[in-house]
Image 1 (spheres, rainbow, N blue to C red):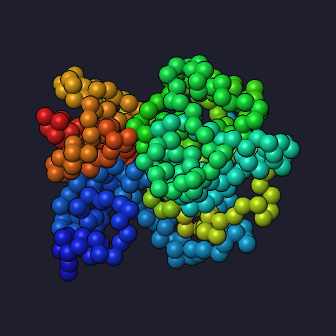
Image 2: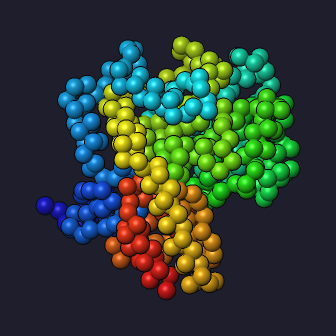
Length: 404
C-alpha cells in the first residue's frame, strides 16, 4: 500500500499541473469530517467548495446513489428519464418566483452558465428578433467558469490570462459601490443581450452587493429588455439559508439562474432554471448534453433536496450562519490590522484579511481544519449545511490561533 507521500509523487508525475493541491490525499469522509490515507482526521469546512450540503456519506445520499446505480445509470436524452423529470419538478416548485419555469440539466456550473448564455443569445435573436443585441455584461471580480465563454465573462484577469483573444461581446461592469451606482447600471442599454451576476461573489472574495442594488439592476434590465441571469452555482441549494441566493437580501428574481455544486451532494450535475418566456428559446436541437440529467445524478439531487427539507437545514443554515458571523467578528476585534471584515450570508462566509490568506489557511490545515481562499485575501467558510456550532467553534478557534 502506498504512503501519502508516494501517492503525491505519482500524482506529480501523471497529472497535469493546472491545480496546486494541498499535500493531503483524502480517503474517506463522514458528516463534516474527512480522513487522509495516513488516517489523520480533518474537520472539513470547505465542503467540496460548497458542493456537499448534507456532508460526506450521508445515508440518504448513499442509499439513493447505490439503488440507482444498481438500476439505471445512463440512457441519454433520447428518452424521458423518470428521475430527471422528478428533479426538475422539485426544483421548479422551489423556484416559485419564476413559475411557470423550465429546467435544463447538464454536468457542471460552467456548463450551466454556458447554457444560460446561449439561451439569452437565442432568446434575443430568435424570439425577440433582435440579433443586434450581442453584448453580455458580467461584473469585475466575478467567476463564472472555465469554458471559453464563461472565462471570457469572468471578471478576474488571472483566470483569462493566456487564453486570448477572448470573445468580443463579453464586457465588464464595475462592482457597485451603492444601490444606484450609475457606473454599473448606465452601460446596460437596448443593445445589451444579458447581464450575469452572482448574488454573492464567491471566488471574488465573498462580496455581497450593496442593499438595493439588485432591485435597481432588475429595474434597469426590465426597462431595457435585457435578460437577467443569476449565477447560483455557489449560492444555491440552501447555502445562504434560502433555497436560492436570490430569495435572500433584496429578494429579486432573475429571468434565468444556474445551479451546480451542492445540487447533487458532490455527484456532478448542473442546471439552469428559466422563466417560461425565456425557456422557449430552446427548441429541439438547439442545445444538448449527453450526460446531463442522467438517472444517477438526478437521484442524488432528489436525495439532497429531500434531506434538506426533512432535516430543516434552511433554518439550521441561517442559525449557524449567524453564529459563525458572530465568531468571525470576534476575530476582527481581536486581530486589528490583520482581520478586516466579515462577509457573506448563511454558511457562505469570509473573513477578509489585510494580506494573502493562503499562509493562514495552510496553518489552519496543520491544526486539522480545512478552509479555502477566496479572492486572494479572504478565508472562506463553506461547510456542509449539517455543521454544528461546536464544529464551527473548532474551526474559528484554529483560525484564531493561526492569525496569532
